[in-house]
Image (cartoon, rainbow, N blue to C red; front, side, top):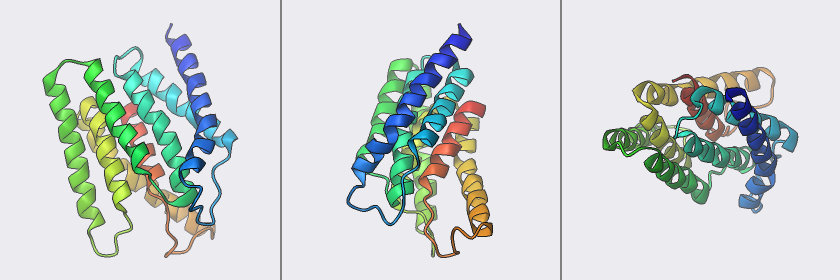
Length: 208
């Protein structure tokens, strides 16, 4: 049953990844910023890995549908940020509201819901302070996304939240170093942070 669940959810993720590219481009058709959207083949593979990983880690946990909804919206957000350095509020709102409603449906435990809200609050405050630092490259779209992702990470527990706060900076730092070494970017080139936030949150949900 577990293998069937993971396979079925991975196929669902592949479909979500396939649809994410045109969906993402529809949110940023007016500001492509000289960039190209990721290919549908790549996003199909990423979607399968993301969804399948969550299913393998969480199994039949009632929170799995909420995490998959967040992941589906996250795939579209990754496309918009990579394509146009943009994290549209409607998509970030879908992560927050959809994830929140899914968590509420998954449990009636007020304590866990309170921890989830605390996770969102801590994520917002932490990233808002970082965004206000001199020469910070974080935008407030990143801050709002961090807060939205803090909700399910808080629900999963403090270890997952800590990983979710730390891992995006590790992923972004490694990515920038690789791009600099390959000559793909310069030190002043804007690099989207949304995919690192999403990737870090996914790893935290799988490992935390």
